[in-house]
Length: 94
Image 1 (cartoon, rainbow, N blue to C red):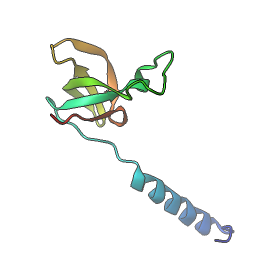
Image 2: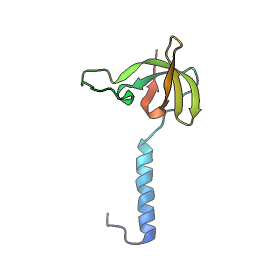
Image 3: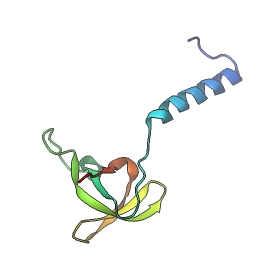
Image 4: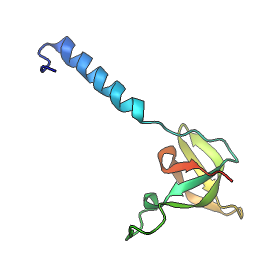
């Protein structure tokens, strides 16, 4: 592919690249009460060995804060302080 030279070509190239990137980038959607796993490294552990689990225990979605942002609680009912983005969560299947 030759390099874009005009303004229109540059804009078209940017649109194509954005479409290519966004095609692979999917934010997971959850509802209140769904069981989810949380990405371990999202909680900023000091050291992560390669044999540690990548996903942390199941949590329940307590509240949907906004699009893609969730408040979690443990299965025992204890509320987690921080909110989590959907990219750091995945569905837990029982």
